[in-house]
Every structure is written in C-alpha cells, then in structure tokens.
Image 1 (spheres, rainbow, N blue to C red):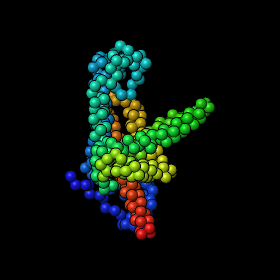
Image 2 (image 1 turned 90 degrees about the horizontal axis):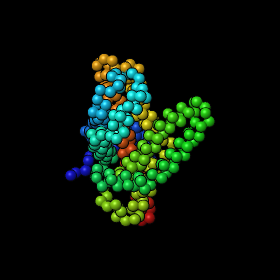
Image 3 (image 1 turned 30 degrees about the vertical axis):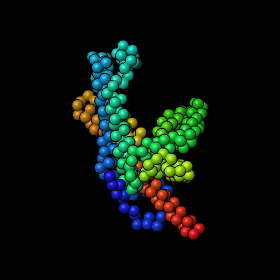
Image 4 (image 1 turned 30 degrees about the horizontal axis):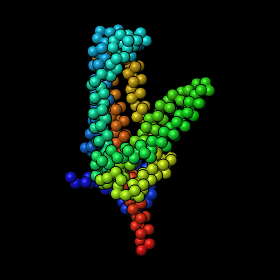
Length: 311
C-alpha cells in the first residue's frame, strides 16, 4: 500500500525554521472535510449517540413504568433515583451490555480515524505498530510529568477552595473539571507526537538504543519546549469541548421537553455540539501533524549542516 500523499508545504516553509504550534492554526483548517475527518466525526457522534441510546434502553428495561419524570426539565427527586438504583436493579446492572460495547467500538474507530488523518497531514505511513507504540512511548515519557503537574495544580486549586471563599470554590469546581480534561488531552497530545516519530519504523527498538533514545528525547522536547503555546491550545480546546455540551444541557433544562418539537430540537443541538467538539479535535490533530513535520525538517537540516561541517 502506498504512503499517503502529504499536504503541500506552504511557500514560507520552503526554508525550514523552528516554529511553534500556533503558527499552524490557520494552515490546519485545510483538510477539515477530508474522508478520514468525516469518519472521525461519525465515530465521535456514534460514541455519544449509541452509548446514550443503549443506556436509555437499558434503563427502560429496568425501570418499566416507574415514577421518573416523563419530560425534560422536570425535577428528578432523590426518591426516584433511590427506587431505580435499589429496587430497579440498576446497582447490579449499571451500564448493561450495549452501552459499553458501543463505546469501545466507536472510541477505537475514532482513534484509528484520527491517526489516519494525522498521518496524512504529516506525510507519514499510518501503521498500526506506530499507533500502538506511540501510546507506549507516551506512558514511558509522559505519564509521570503530566501526572505530577496535574496533582500539583489540582492540589493548589483544592487548597484555595478550602478557604471557604465562594468564588474560589467555583474556580475549583469549574476550573478543576476543565484542567482534568486538559491534562488528559496533554497525555494524548504526547502520544500523537510519539506515534508520528514512530511512523516508518518496524521494530520497537527502532534499530538501536541510540535511535530509540533520540526518538523519546525529541518527542518529549517537542511538547515541553513550548510551555505557553501547547497549554493555551489544550486548555482552550478542553474548555470549548466541555462547554458546548454543558450549554446544550442548560438550554434543554430551561426550555423543557413538553412537545416532540422541543425534544427533537434538543437532540439536534446535542448532535451539533458533539460534531463541533469532534471537528475541533481533528483541527488539533492536524496542527500537531504540521508542527511535527516542520520540526522534523528543521532537525534534518541541522544534521545535514553538522555533517557537512565535519566533512
């Protein structure tokens, strides 16, 4: 199978120079409706829709003719929840079979589609080995620093909230939620960078210990040498992706669902929020690919100059 055709390099990058990820925000918009991008959008939509649908059917089988509210916007009492959990069998069968199965399949599809679209943007082969080993590399070089930083920042927020000041409590709740998503996204970002560096290599050791060590060091530095640009992108993206569904839920709670039209409108708004969040992730995948491609070209040019100077 032939390697994917890379996207054309902009003219201002014909002479490689170090660039941060912000430089590629506009360029990464290209390819926003490619085949693999559409597959990613479909997979992410299935992840949300199918899991919710299967879980709703699971609740219907358990609850039957329960005392739960019939319409969106009505108050669910603690007694309703207790009855469903204790006497309706929910505590013994919390998720059922359909929801977890749909979640695993749709999430795996989205991961693979994301890797394919990113590899195409970077101009590297999208192999399964690089996909898997990239996550292993991220566990090796990214789990500890990301975990330590997350613990430190979240502990500071928790300490501020413990002062009893209401505003700091809200900051811990809202900001902590967004930052947890951001730290998870940072780990995935490290995995994206690692798998791009793995593309084209057939073995775990990449041929030698020196090659493997160089790959890990380069992958680590490509993330952590931009301590302002990457966090700004990750936190902003996490806030948008968390905020859109939350706003739809608030809107649905306020308008209620007493008519079929309102229910359909709410479902359409939820689908739009999911697709917008998914497209944002594909944009971020392409930004990472373009940044990695330029960084690889810069490092290759430096090696050429150094080898020419030695000869």
